[in-house]
Structure formats: structure tokens, C-alpha cells
Image (cartoon, rainbow, N blue to C red; front, top):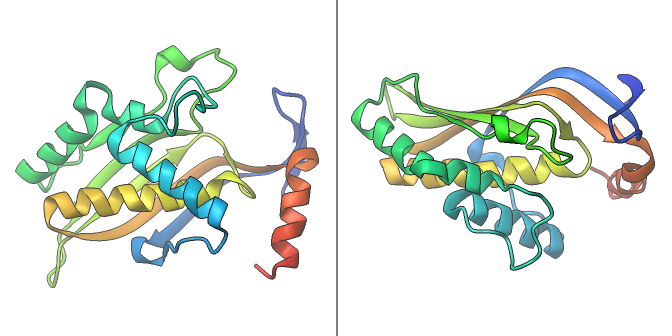
Amino acid sequence: MERGKYSRDQREEKVKYYKHVLIVIPCNCCEDSDDKLTSLCDSAFAENLITGKPNGEGLQAHDYTYGEELQFEDGLERTIQLLREHPETRRAVIPLFKTKHIGNSEVPCMITTVFDIEDDDDEDCVNLTILGRSNEAAIAMKSDIKGFAELLKYVAGRLELNAGYILLHDINLHCRINSDMDEIKRILKAGY
């Protein structure tokens, strides 16, 4: 992160950030981490997205999980059904950030998901667009993308389609200078 701007966030932590970052990744390029702990966390996150069940009794770090928000009022199931009945729909949207989150100390970083079916001459596929209000580049983003890739594979499987692309639009992609720098140094040293 040689470019970008410095500021202090609402937690009074120094951050370096970029505004409006777009990332497009073929779903099949999201690999499992070689680090066993990271891989376990990625799997737990993906499982939560698909089932809505917490990642462990008493271990929940926030007042919400993305899985709970996706499953709220059967949102994920209803979205899959909508895509099955109307593959051309532009309404397969599941909000993750809701008015109940406003003003809380911990709020969803990813604020909405949109599924769409791409009508290709060879093979149709389902894509996932995610709008993020804020995302930690060094720590959270890789796990978020891996978890959402597994969610996309799940939805594609249910629709008997291929998993296509993940498009992530982060309004604020950042690193916390004090708390993330050791992890960033470790990542750089490992040759990423």
C-alpha cells in the first residue's frame, strides 16, 4: 500500500486507505490458505454464510454475522428461488447492513450482495457482486472473498449452474497502521 491516504477512524486508530476499490475475481481462483488456522477460519466463515449458524458457541465476536443477515426471513433461500424462476432478474439482492446496525460499535463491513445469472452462449453462470462500506485489506479481505466464493459455489450448485465471478466494490479499503502492520510485514516476508 505505497499509495493511499492516512487518517484516523472512529476507533481513533491510524489507518491508511484507498477509496472505491473494485476487485473482480473468477470464483475458481479463490484457493484455500496453506495456513491451517486461516483455512479453518475461512471454512467457518463460509459455513456461517451458507447456514446462518454462528461460528461457535460463545465465540461470536460481533452482534451480527453475515450468515444471519443472509438467512433473515429466508433471504438466501428466497433469492435462490427467485433466480431459479426468473434467471433474468436484477432483483436478487440481499442486504447485510440494516437500520438496526446504525450507531452500533460493530457493524457489517459488507453491506449488500447481488446475484445475477450471466446468459452465455456456451454455459450460463451465476455471479456475485458485493458492496463493502469498509474492508481491512491485510486481515479480513482474503477471508471475506474466500467465504463469499464458497457461498457463490453453493448458490451455483443449487441452481445447477457454474460459479462465475465475484465483484467486490469496497468504498474504503484500509489497513490499521498499529494493529495490522505486524501481519502485513509477515505477509510481505512470506513473499505474497
